[in-house]
Length: 607
Image (cartoon, rainbow, N blue to C red):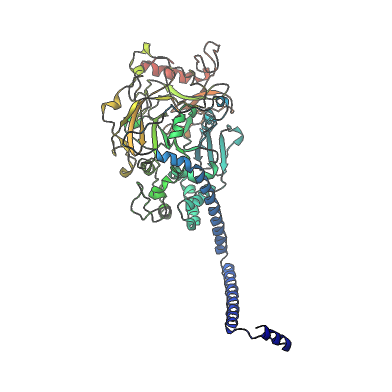
């Protein structure tokens, strides 16, 4: 080889190359030229196609942007899931066994006493999520927002809207307004639900259909309550729990009604208003269904067919045949609405409530720990008057009514409600405690969060059936068997309906409890006025103005409206903030006379 090289160099001739090397170079040149021609032809064809179809070009750009956004959000979701995986594994390892699992207990280690003086709880934070659709806010919105301030120690209220006319400056510090812009609600839900259901290629279609549904039927947003924790997950950094809720309510101090044990040990806590005992209704209430922010409660709603991926059965309790899905459900509604519009007919589609499929999914997930706690007042069975105390000036917030008052409905009642007589309501008028709406509320919030209820006795197995909640599809109903004598027995404290219900390790239980209420009063975490709001929408002067944040105030709510009560002691002297008996303001003479007439007819002690 060396001699040949020297000879070639001397003669000025390149050495002969092997035949195989020549063939390799030839094919390499052919491959490079071919790829270049293919790239050039593809680029020219794509440019020609996009010039003929500008809409397709825009759609392609949106598709790329949506894909990039979905990938970024998916990475964030995985990071968040890894942060809470240890807690989820610990909770899952505690399930199983043949003995009844222990209910949430107050015997947990308490937080640092030094944290009792803080303005926020050092460990837990609950986000109450409310998406609002519409250019106008409810006429009672100011009262709702003012009542939210009473739970600032533990709770924030996240109100999503589409540029609604909201006075942000007048909001308490624990009320957050998030504007998604015009038609932004449908866009946000469409992008997130396409990702969560594993159908990013359907993003544009879902956005378009949801924007149409929300613009045509704003009430349709309630169908998606179970998804809020996942759809709005980007806004839940720093929170340990979340709940969907409504605007047709006023809140007391939720801090006094949620215990530390429930925050630590439960996956879901929902508040009932007594109908779980009177009618056996075991479903998640739309006003309060607190979820622990964890993988255990994430995406449970995918088991409901109307929220699942296209062509899927939805799995679990929500499956119904395997041919539907979220996209199919929206397309059906859109098609029927279009046909009705062409015929000049009114059309209101059927809406799926969280009280149906989602409640069934939760009640058939054996790894979950769920509690149905009797802590809410509803106008179906409340007293004719409900008192709302707003926090401020050293006073605590409260929602309360007089014990033993006659109710308005037949759907069940709160602990001590007239639907089941109590010791106080059956006693002679001279022996009943006076109803003082301004009696001192529970003590200030503490980091230990003891709550207002105490369990009595052990867990007792509960039999269930499906013969209740007639507005819910039969396949989704979960009902407690309340035909036994236990359901009508009074508790040791003389209170009726004093039962809470549990779903633990796949089994149902009931447990007696006692609750702390000021004498002559019944307190609730929330007051839900689903019936009274019909009058509130129509009436004007019956709805009183609300003071600025930080100023204490009190109101009496009736089915005609709500009016203020004077914050001054009877006799002109006060024994301290939040104490003493108070009288009505002179401007409310008509309501005062009406109350006195009701008291005379019902033989009640004057309040």
